[in-house]
Length: 550
Image (cartoon, rainbow, N blue to C red; front, side, top):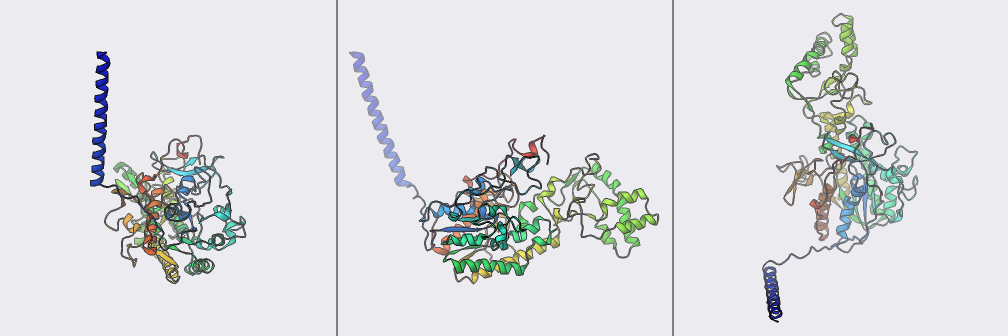
């Protein structure tokens, strides 16, 4: 009985303490809430914008292409998909229809050969042992879209130029303009057009981001293929045709985006012009080996009036300890084949010495300011002749690109080539801005280049901020500094050209801000840091396979 009484008393005390503690806790919580009220959840409204049928038109930047491929994660986190998700928090439909690629790794369009030994290569990942990007194994061929093309809202097609929006040849396999990414979802491949398919959906609101590839393709070729650079007159005609058809055949308003400066991309910045690092011993040995070339160049200057000493000095090779310029073939240089032959005929050099000069008939070290393509990184430092690795190192002993299709020119951009690309980009952006200004308010311009040197808009924009024109390289998001590269804390994908998911989110927020200010709308931001940056190779990359060689 005493035990039972004691137990009962303890239970009563425990219950009293529990109730008392809970009451005190609740009181404390209520007090803290009163003193520090929780923020209201973000609200969204579309303002004056009609977002009932949002449609996106553009190229790879619109499609969600990244890491050298169109694959599930990139497509699902495309800029239009991010925008549509925020629109849906207002009064827009919840579903945004894209031509689903249905592939975790996609088909890598950036590698020279795909498939490799029967293996389809997918998206790039970052191999820290190289270090650099490597394609993944287990990709998929570009397959037809299995959904309903008439319901689509994202008409972003990787790789297209402005003119391909307008021609049915974009879906025609027999045409040079053919693009498999459009053919897979075209309403009538070979007959329909991308723009026509987009107009057929009768959009209420449009984002139009097109034109980058009209300069990017030329830049990616190292300016070796002039056919890839659209003329100003063609761009003017084609871009205004696009805007005109959208205005005449829909009642939609929208946002038009300018072309970013393509040569700022990591594709042209990851490999420096002076990527050759040597010890003092290596430099001395190489200088002895190149003494014959330098002497022959002096002889050319002394015996052939059409060649100045300054011209020949620019071709000489002289190494030092530390960083050195890449030795590259330059097809724009005068070919010294005849001059070297005449030196041999005059007895100034022996036949053996003449034979040794063959690789250097059009070679020179790169100079500061010239840009090297990311693709050059795969061959620099490798032997041109595997049987003689010590004497045929590419970029050091054998000129980079000596035996390539473009004779080296595809691996770098000269200062003059960069100037042409910049001038053409400026001209295209002027055409875009003019077309928008003449749209009667139907389109609003998002000038992605605001704040860059030479741009009339002085406010620091996202590109100017990212590339340090505000005094700090990188862009801060919620206190975190994100870099303009494809490092784990970068905002570019591993192809060095396209944004990764975080980069897409930053751009989506910029466009949301513009819509808000233009249409009295309000949307919550995309959470940039909640998205991944680059992914690392984990045994699934080509570079990690010993049995598969490209």
